[in-house]
Length: 196
Ligand SMILES: Nc1nc2c(ncn2[C@@H]2O[C@H](COP(=O)(O)OP(=O)(O)OP(=O)(O)O)[C@@H](O)[C@H]2O)c(=O)[nH]1
Ligand SMILES: [Mg+2]
Image 1 (tube, rainbow, N blue to C red):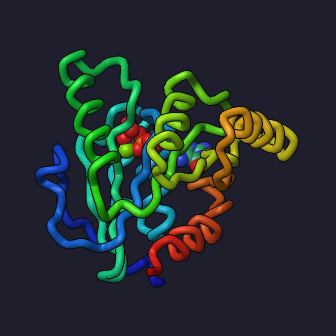
Image 2: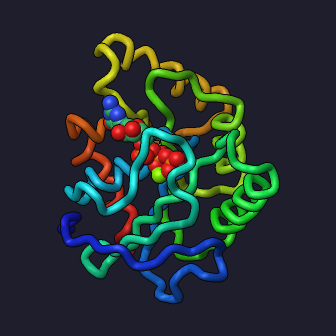
Image 3: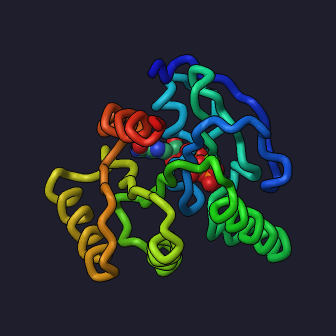
């Protein structure tokens, strides 16, 4: 699949506004600022396809990108963005939850965790909730360029241990939107899940 053949399609505030087209879909979830939008740019080799920022809370809707007329990549707003007004946070929570549970074309959820930090309670709840609902997901440890090999391995083991304690077996991949580490592996994973 040519990931560089990518273009913006639409911004959907909730599942009602998501495209009617039933292409296999892959979404990027995780805390604000973890690097979801940057990763989409790196996967598609574009600098500014998805908007990124140092300030958490940049992505505020579900942004759809079409790859090769074959699949959608969906950039989700981050959760745990403390500065957003409570009402807005609650609405995002509900809308994203409904999207994750009810979007029939969703093939795989890529859940991002900053490799420098231990998964939070919110991350753990997310793992649990995905597993209980039998939603296919994988965990991506982001910003791997900021850690030594040793520290990265220890972060990976921490995440694998948390998952194992929940009896969850999913791929855990390290990646960096700066160095490109893990990008081919993520592309292969997406290709694997986009087939019939
Ligand atoms: N060093 C390093 N910095 C990164 C990497 N990926 C993202 N960043 C930085 O982290 C910050 C947040 O990146 P975004 O891609 O906007 O994060 P996001 O998860 O989309 O954030 P929200 O839209 O707020 O949910 C930016 O300043 C990026 O430059 C990475 O792989 N390595
Ligand atoms: Mg974003």
